[in-house]
Length: 337
Image (cartoon, rainbow, N blue to C red; front, side, top):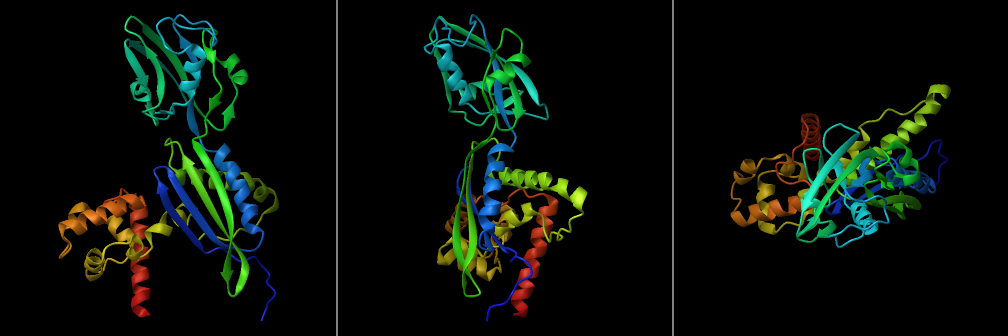
């Protein structure tokens, strides 16, 4: 028998699947018909526009006066050098919003992203190619690297740097891909509920989960302006959104890891029921499980690495405490049942 509702159905399930390095799939359900796209579309836009990244905003090359110049002894012209430079992803170390770094190279040398790491910046794309210089050439250049969001064209940067610098188009966003699918799910014999499936990929400056958290925080922040005027009643959160995202995978049964029967039975006898229990264990604690052989140990290590939560994962004290409490509650419920 159908009933008349006075509020929309509240989603209760969220799951995170690590597809590859810096690529995850996040799914949430069930949503009322039409609600999924209403939330997914602005979240996708915020993923692409609100996550802070680092990028070079200006370059100064010794002996070069403009971006269409060429340099003796370098295989690339300056325009191609700049294109290659934009494809290398810089990460400012520390809390500074803007740094200036100086580089000097003597040939013969093929210069890659890994050659640009120093005390001020790290590189998320160490194999990225920059330039090749011959044996009698020297390449000296300086970069201004800044933190920002989204995309800023060189025209907006030109007036902010010295005249001897070439302003660059700055691609700050570390999110390479953010797409979503809407799928139908069955709830109480009703097939019209919906499921959001996000696929998020970053360049390594931040993790996909961190980018997703930033998008959620940006959405909450933008919407909060209405609360100050209208005194909107918001249902209290039972858990933080970040906890929900992180715990979805961790609180799944170890059966989901697809372990061999020998490894699974060993964990079962030790009453290790949830993926989080393995992530919270130290290497020594895992080795000391009764009847756990070397092959089973290596298998568990490998599948936990692939899950994104290796054995001995470095959780914060608060997160570790919350996980342990949730595991205790789940086991108590199972025993009572």
